[in-house]
Image (cartoon, rainbow, N blue to C red; front, top):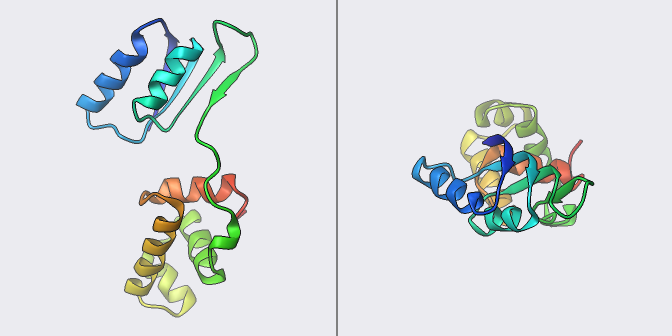
Length: 137
């Protein structure tokens, strides 16, 4: 989920984190026009996936606070990369299996291994990590 706000003032980072938790939002990136660096740190320490502000209190340059890239491509097998590339194209496990000559259960097994290696079970986040780390195009 992506949350867009105009400004995050001092102390509002905690409030935002609590409000998102109450709503059950666990995988969130916040985009703000203005935010202090301390508020961005609060958001990340509160469990949000990332935060971007076009202006911060200390600088007019964009501030980006996000998790570092996860794993290099060498950790994924060629088969896992081909499954992940098809997930990025929006295919279901059944369609991926048909294309690769695998059962949907085998595709699910590959995705479970990929998830363990990359540290997330969310298909969209798997794809985002793979693209960010240039594992797939």
